Amino acid sequence: MGIGSQGKALLATDLNEYVRQAVRVVDRALDEWMPRPPEVPAQLASAMRHAVFPGGKRLRPVLTLMSCEACGGRVEDALPAACAVELIHCYSLVHDDLPAMDNADLRRGRPTVHVVFDEATAVLAGDALLTYAFELLARHVPDQDVLRESVLELAQAAGPAGMVGGQMEDWLGTGTDGATEARLQRIHELKTGALLRAAVRLGAIAARANATQRNVLDRYAESLGLAFQITDDLLDVVGDPQRLGKPVHQDEKKLSFPGVLGIEKARRRVEELVAEACRSAAALGPAAGLFQQLARYVAERNR
Amino acid sequence: MGIGSQGKALLATDLNEYVRQAVRVVDRALDEWMPRPPEVPAQLASAMRHAVFPGGKRLRPVLTLMSCEACGGRVEDALPAACAVELIHCYSLVHDDLPAMDNADLRRGRPTVHVVFDEATAVLAGDALLTYAFELLARHVPDQDVLRESVLELAQAAGPAGMVGGQMEDWLGTGTDGATEARLQRIHELKTGALLRAAVRLGAIAARANATQRNVLDRYAESLGLAFQITDDLLDVVGDPQRLGKPVHQDEKKLSFPGVLGIEKARRRVEELVAEACRSAAALGPAAGLFQQLARYVAERNR
Image (tube, rainbow over all chains, first blue to last red; front, side, top):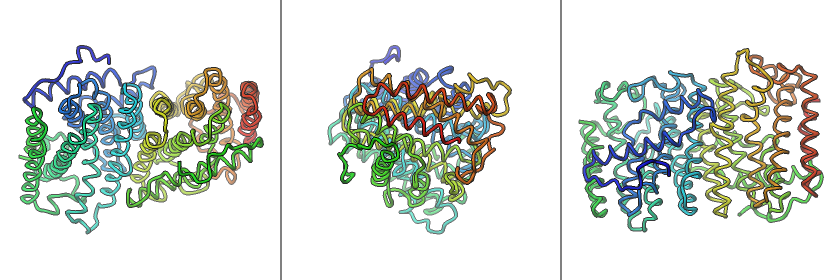
């Protein structure tokens, strides 16, 4: 796999320590696997790296590695999929931030790709990251069945019936008055939930998990995804722009959970979802604690 | 495969008849396989279809089917790859036409996706087509080895070291004074050549062609790709906007072969390349005639 001293399990039972180890492994693999000049034009390679490094929470690849290990798989089995799901996430942020979409100048406290370079470069860097995610799978996933299942899972979750579909619905939702909780939940299941669920499922696929393990992880991922999105919406209303690294109150015209439910009810909904996620995770044996800590961490970001 | 009465070889020895049959098969498969509402948002499905139907020459999928049959494979073996390479081509046109890139209002005589819908929808429809190309492969390519090789070939050809890399170089080339024939050829090998070569290779992969067949097709594709691009550049200088379905003289600041070589020398270069392509194709046995007709057709567009 060429990721140096890997081949070891990430044994931490403390979430912070687990994340620290997982992020180091994922970042090293991304750095090694991402294309470089002269194979690719220098500006394109720079823009791709600007979108990927330094990373945010790396929530999706961490979930992929955690899920793989929870199902008895090895870190290196899930590493290509972990990197691929992160590349998809990063591409989606680059395109989301474009002037024609959210028109965001800042991301993780740094100027966005189209600000550092230009719009054309941002469009192309997003396209390149998206395409390269599939190249990375085809190049580095050793097992043929796992490869097919992984490509299918990632493409479905990221594509028109998943993340991109959710972005479309979200875009069309701007300014309409049909904002119900059900519609909002549907949008976010697609826009955010599908890729978070894919992150978990890719870990299970890499570990060749059984149906019971997959069901448990699916239920966990559904609660976690929605809790994550409501918390994101809350941060956009009550968050600290310094800590977030981006302006708040940017999405006023957009559908949001605090807008539909009110802040207090949205907070209670997050708590319920975290409790559900923790109950699902209880079936994951020794790994349960990590998954439960992760669910609580996601909810506590809005305090 | 669900493509109705297929499973038959496309037996025509006349190029027009072959293309007519192949386009019918490809269009039917694209129509059947592309996602629909309510699985995907209606506007996204419409925008994706606007980019794919009615098609242009369908040169790439026709090449995939021809190459597969020339190597002894069946049409249906190559059909998923033929559709996938066409989806990639269509996505690249949607993103290329964006205001931040070529800012083109017309394509194939019709308003472009961002004109009919809006820029955000065009970005998302392109992303969706790109992602769906890989979903389609994972869903419909039956053989595991063929799937891996196909995903790898398509992603490499379309990604940062292929088509997207070429678009980046082309974008950066605007207005520079370093326009040499070598640089131009390198840009076009990436921007246009990589995907045309992938179209041919995907057919060979689907047919499990031997190394000799693959080498012959590779050499053919290289000559054809460059002939195609020089002809495109020529059409942009001397073409009839009515016949082209788009304005001419749009790319004056861009690097182009007529700009570097002059019109007459560019035309002679096309003729040499077509002759090379025809010589390569001669090794393809009974299929040679079709490949030679196709090479001549590509060159004669600029008369």
